[in-house]
Image (spheres, helix red, strand yellow):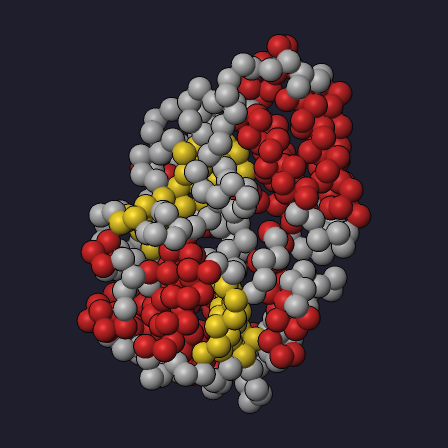
Length: 415
């Protein structure tokens, strides 16, 4: 099943029966009346039920960190004013899953917000989004309902890649500048309006709506034993299916990609390059153990006959420019690493590869946010996975192939 959205223009499909994207293929945006026919009204639960249920289905956050939702819920204080924050900023340039969810299935996101807010005893709910179409869809969805009048939809100013991190989103609401805090104060300690805040990605809230309505047993009928349920992925480039795809957890990544030896990027711009995906499935714990976290849910394979090295250089330069400028290893280290990589692409020898690896070791684990570590994973894994391509560049200066253009940067849009 496939539908093409007007904004962004993204094919949408599913493997098996869709849950999050139910009705999207047939109707595009699912309005409130149709949402009620598909899903019914939100089912409100006690906090203790949500804590146990999210533990039983091993629900992990969908924003990239894959943090256990049950731990976030359990960490929220009782008997105090609290807030709920839905992060729809989607700063990952290659990802479109959150935009599609907010644009086409906004009521499922709002249901999840209401479920969590009721369980925590608060009406303080904020959804932060950058994309104009997603913002308008959510605002319209709130207006379509009588139970969501307290939900606040905030269109934040574009704040770059690091502005999508949850602490940066909180800072953006407080100060207008969405940058990670220098101290690792988590939202459940101090978040929206200085209140303890349950914050997570919009897809996470949509899953909470489904779990609350379906119950543990029905929710767990789809997916794997280790991680029940489904996930939204953005699949780019040379793939069997492209665009935003809803898949049961446990689905082999090879189902999404043709059987070639071209390198694959798993996890997006804070992800890792691999030579193959044999044995890998949509299982966040297993992927992390294999050294390729699912991250923002991006799977990308450049097309045959294109230069992947040039694409990696382009994205590495963009990542370097996205530093918030708060930490020396990031502000100085990432541009230097990108320069090393560009030199390798132009035919430099092993000394520049050694320089890049030395600098990668110096930036890892030294930032106020995950940007240095994620960028280091992207570049470091490319040095390993693209060894053959880099060897051609080293011996010939250039490989002679046209540059790959699968991975977008914001000014280019999705390819």
